[in-house]
Length: 171
Image (cartoon, rainbow, N blue to C red; front, side):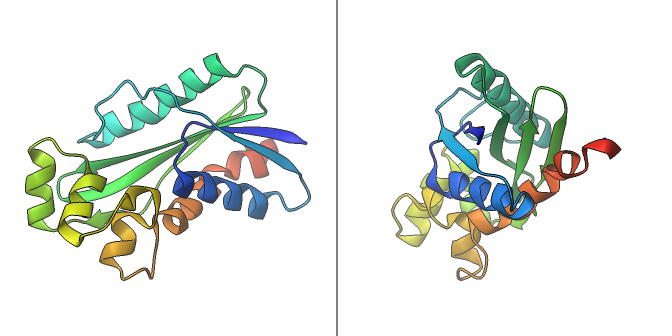
């Protein structure tokens, strides 16, 4: 059994990682462990570079916390312009896979509140009268009427980030 350390305790992120690994490696058993580690960037990253840096920092900090895992996974959501997206980084101490999720346009009123310093999930909860949406369907779920969810979009990006591990002889 291989161990996958997920640098988050967010159920939506953990679910996406489990689904992506199980789909990508159907004959492999995994033990998943979520941990809380610092991204070393703002709670709400506001550009692509800061968002990716947050994911890379989460990988680094997860490796320092748990030294014997087979895989380390980081998912970091951010905003750039009027879009939200997330970076996926997967590391097995030999290679690294990465991908960026689909981008989602955000309403102007939401962007104004985020620019004032609030985290996207908290803003979405206020605007849509929800509770802790970031650990559920996310802004994506709210704005697509749950046709897509945070987990479903992250799962797709994680599968793409797993390509170097599915085809290690090519990377």
